[in-house]
Image (cartoon, rainbow, N blue to C red; front, side):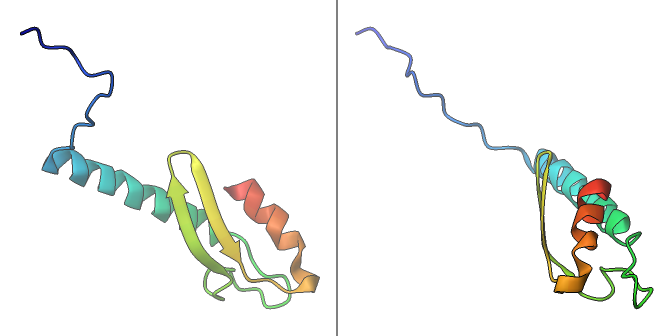
Length: 86
């Protein structure tokens, strides 16, 4: 009987060291994003938007960054600043 190769490749599970390296890279990316966001100050209060709790749900997947901003109608300029730093 002849064996045929499956057209669907099984995804290899990463080794423990590869998982650790991937997690370390992910944590470093999150730290960099948070550090960048801390450079943005809320103009009326003079405090960074991270410390004020205006940044929530930070997610980084490959080269994409997703973040939820909690800003008021008078703070819309902060959105463009976030896009610039990330």
